[in-house]
Length: 358
Image 1 (cartoon, helix red, strand yellow):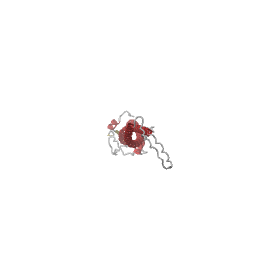
Image 2 (spheres, one colour):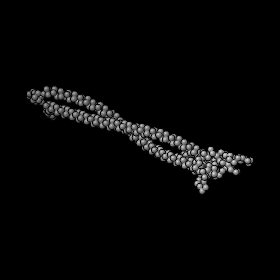
Image 3 (cartoon, helix red, strand yellow):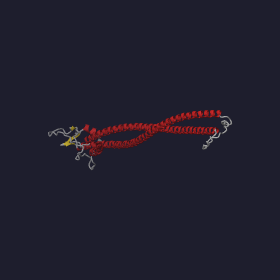
Image 4 (cartoon, one colour):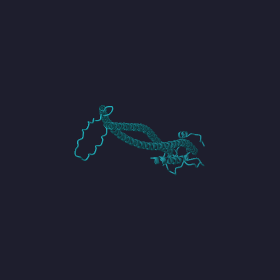
């Protein structure tokens, strides 16, 4: 058989006519050339299918990686939200503590003012006592100036007149002897000194106690102010870190979301293009792999020259994609399935995930 002849050469050459039909060798040569061309096309299309399948697997892996990235970002976002809530709670606690410290500081300031007022009052009292002490000392000095060194002179006793006889009367009780004036002055002086010493001791103790209370209050206020300043600084630092983390997490999430959406859009476009290419590929394959229609050549029963050749015409009838009765004309002994059926089955298998995704 002239199997070495190409399909285009056979089409241009045409079939030789014989009695009641075409020449068998020409028809077989044409069918062999058509089968060889179909085999070549089927091999190329299988290679394209393998490439498309590899691209599809790659896209699916990229989609799974994108989904894993989205899940990871969602988990990171939830963790960031939890950290932000914890930071907000701690900030609220620190604010409450700061308010309580401020209230205590205000109360301490009010008590300090009261203590200062009490100190001023005690100072006024001390001044009054000092004035009284000065007056007492002046009085004591006056008394000492009035008293001579030997003490006050005793009153001179005039000689009693000679008693005259008189009627006897009951004797009156003798008057008690009066204490000497020097003893009274000394007692007054000692008492004044004791009063002065007690007043000075009380004033010194009150002033020392008020000074100590004021110093302790000032120390507590200073310590509370330092604690408050440290708490506020720590709160500001925590709030700053939380804001920075939230800003960074938001920026990362926005970037990842944008990248994911772009990848999904690109994947969807690739899937659509891939589906369109597969549908177009299946239609072309179904059209190319249909059996060659028998050439409709009008046979003139009248006498015609035997050497006349007729150019065969290939018809392309519409073939269903899933028609199980479609067969290809193959050589004797070849029982393989048709390429169109293989491609149709592959198209159905590839279209299933795309339909599920839509």
